[in-house]
Image 1 (cartoon, rainbow, N blue to C red):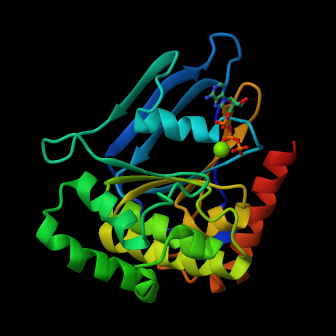
Image 2: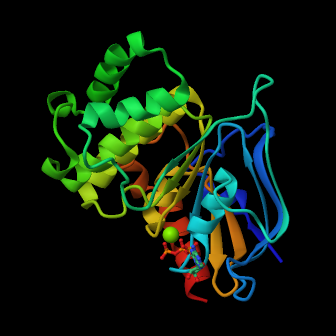
Length: 269
Ligand SMILES: Nc1ncnc2c1ncn2[C@@H]1O[C@H](COP(=O)(O)OP(=O)(O)OP(=O)(O)O)[C@@H](O)[C@H]1O
Ligand SMILES: [Mg+2]
């Protein structure tokens, strides 16, 4: 049974509650169960909706099925039971972009050419590629590195390039599987801030998988906590911290620490 955790108004006096008008669902999973081989039940009765423009994170122990949920939303795999609906946008199927757990840049292509793959997939006319690539490289602080191959980049730069390709595709729904997992704390913070800026500017819907609870709190509107074997959603937290957020100063708010304690507690029990 899913528990919705809310907090008494008194404890969040320092952090005004966000106005949250109900937004339409952009993707929903209804009673989804999943087994890859017909024997091991990987997910059981997963039921949630991603709202339009929402930043939703999923946390939980290794192997609980977080990546599988993203694969299901993207259509890479099919559920064994239940259904997944991705709502059309402007009469067309919503496009869903994926940033994988390990960066999946094409090793034989330069950063610019990797970004061009996203533009190709989005159907951006060829004559617009050069200017779009230039502005994405600039946005991600990679202007000097468009002609570099992935092997000559640092881990953080590769993740930025992968983010550039995702943004080039310009999906309505961004599925991000531990995109900053391998990065140092400082780079994580920088890219997280960049991601928030892009998300709030373009009102994308994001499902963000991470092992880092503090990262999830800083970025998200809502956090789903999963339990393993079979993977289930154990609890849901609404992150009622004010926006826009500065990822460094938000960590100083008492409410941030309270949420962090509650979620840790949930994961450890
Ligand atoms: N292609 C596959 N074929 C068979 N089983 C799979 C496949 N992919 C994942 N699994 C199994 O599904 C379960 C959930 O895997 P998944 O990768 O979704 O977990 P996760 O929560 O993303 O873990 P992590 O935090 O380590 O990335 C695991 O038991 C895993 O062995
Ligand atoms: Mg995973």
